[in-house]
Image (tube, protein in one colour):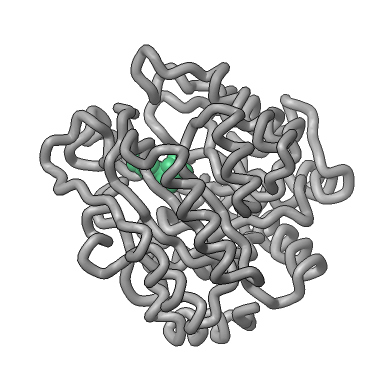
Length: 334
Ligand code: 5AD
């Protein structure tokens, strides 16, 4: 196993059958080894500094019905909300005061969040915070829409893509080709682009993971988000088991070894799956955390999966807790 891990660090890629072995035969000892290698690569590129991004969940309304997601259109047991522009700006203000210099606006594909509204929100934040980066995570839009948001001042866009078993995660009507086109458009327009996968989602096989790894290798995104699948009680996948910590940490390390300078978060999903998930993610090569800056009353409504963490070190107000946790493992907030 070590030979593949050393080769991956050296050459930044493997042959499909070598990835297959790594994914199927990685025992506890090999996992610790690859995590260590990935942490070293991350330390070499970024030092012991962890970037923080303030996550603002702008709307939990969504026109889509993705099988895994708690804010899917078909979930009637959810109180829907949409933040006003003023509300979003208040989040930014609070975040700026706490030291955040990147705001991530994330939401469902909410038809009421029109291109005009998004453009207006982005340009208002851009005017108020010229020294901040604006990241959008608002799903699939037209190229023209992405261009408008970019012109208005957005810098980055996150769009995860479980390419290989897309059909098993999304109902008919959503197209894997369109999502791919979105990623191409985003890169082409000049966004720093993020993608990623859910680990252990229902139906995901080793072959899917290998193809996803190779796809992301081709795409060369600036950001790569790797989190475990977690079930949500009001979805068709309610009874499906979560992804595992081990598999998530293995993939995180694989992506770090393949993409030494990528921004890779220790995801909220990983921190939800296990109490020290954030730290484990960092020790496996992650270099970003995204504390929640959404208004307190709305946080529990942005319920992508059961028990989603949004308090303590997952919250912007809990930055001191995060700081202490990071110090314990030898890291600091950048
Ligand atoms: N489990 C894990 N991650 C999920 N996401 C949505 N639903 C789930 C789930 N059930 C992820 C999306 C997106 C991020 C905001 O949350 O894939 O990347």
